[in-house]
Image 1: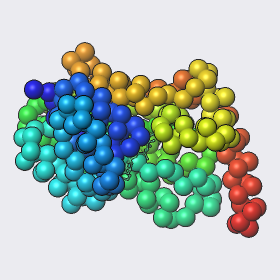
Image 2 (image 1 turned 90 degrees about the vertical axis):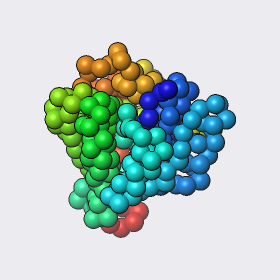
Image 3 (image 1 turned 90 degrees about the horizontal axis):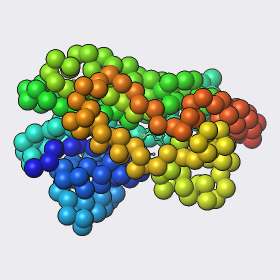
Length: 268
Ligand SMILES: NC(=O)c1ccc[n+]([C@@H]2O[C@H](COP(=O)([O-])OP(=O)(O)OC[C@H]3O[C@@H](n4cnc5c(N)ncnc54)[C@H](O)[C@@H]3O)[C@@H](O)[C@H]2O)c1
């Protein structure tokens, strides 16, 4: 019987691809999302392709709901082998000087605090079973400064550091902890924007040496690899999957111009 895998925010986008990938590989998948309809839809897709799983709606920035997510998983499957911390909200896109408090708090609470809550609950189980894999979806924004993404980059940088510390603390328990740092990913939302001629996506793709976005499937494959026996001694690492976009500063000029125009238009 396959592993028990919790994937937060797997009702859409990258998380959905990760959930389908693990399910098709014979694992039992726990889909989590704050969006009930999307989570149920992904579970239906998994069942339709002969996979096994359950959907647990929960807001990962709320500790009681995170505890309930792990409790439901344990009652149904009796173990947690893999945790993929994927849930996230888009950044607020503003200069730090103009950033509203709520933008900062929302992004930090879902990405960073939510990841911490899920890691802590997973460790309680994995440290007893002396086995486990934790995979955190960060971003190249966490590896460099990016104009207009101050709070998002800080949250992702926090996730990267948490990954490294957690790897050191959990290694003796046979638990590996790694992060994946994607550049722009071709989720259905981003593909639709690209079709509509979004200058934001066009600039990002132009500034990517391979000339394309990463596919959600490429992120999912890397998760499957990190959860596999081959990756048993890989821990504390950040795997960047960005077609080389992290080497470019094209988005900074684009975002600076965009935010200056936005400020002038709104008078702020
Ligand atoms: N799409 C990209 O280009 C890209 C690039 C780098 C990193 N990432 C990261 O990948 C992850 C997935 O992004 P995506 O593009 O698939 O986005 P998405 O919006 O399609 O998926 C995120 C999911 O998280 C869920 N979610 C939001 N808040 C939640 C909460 N509090 N509790 C539980 N679920 C919650 C949403 O409902 C959604 O289904 C995010 O962490 C994002 O920061 C995405």
